[in-house]
Picture 1 (cartoon, helix red, strand yellow):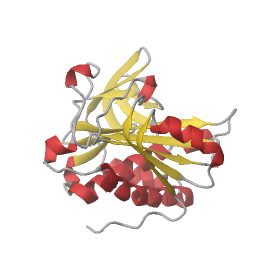
Picture 2: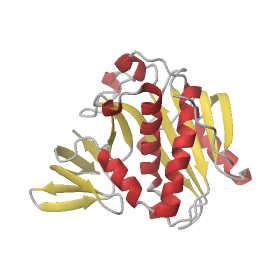
Picture 3: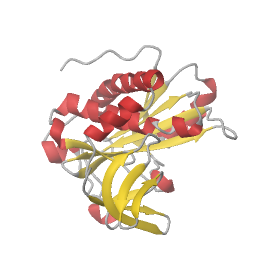
Picture 4: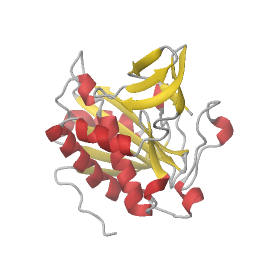
Length: 251
């Protein structure tokens, strides 16, 4: 498949080594005139969700998109769905295998049921106004973390190379991801969350099946029914239907 053109008005920064692409994006933010992608060959202080360390070897994908959104914070956060959809589109464009790439709520991309990629949103601003949004994306292109290092019950980490035999470079992924994200950003800003929600549900892992959702000390078991118009996970539990705005999900 021929590469799409780089999206107009979007800056591109490719670094050899950085502390973290999200941290670099935060430093870049005050001087930005438009969106920017930052990709690094190696991160020395990468971060995952809840402040966890994120270590990834050279050859894997580590990048951040920084934007200047205008919506309320709860609307800004829905861009995690845009990022997940764009990443899945890019993976399918490069690797084929559309049935093998699925989406796990809230913002992971799976390959053959294992965790291929994670997405981390960090907002920058004061008070209720989000001045900048950093969308950090890590993809196991050539190597996955040791399963012994992941949280008990979490999905097994997988790499694209191990699962498919395909060796895709970080640059090739960035070239496919940037235009894919631009398409979903356009849909989101012109049509709202509805088209993203529909597309996300079409590729959702474990929809209609039993899952476990954990928020703090609270754990719920139930059937994953849908994602609602606010992006919340909707489960049918023994106590009835519940909508969960934030949680870690286990299969």
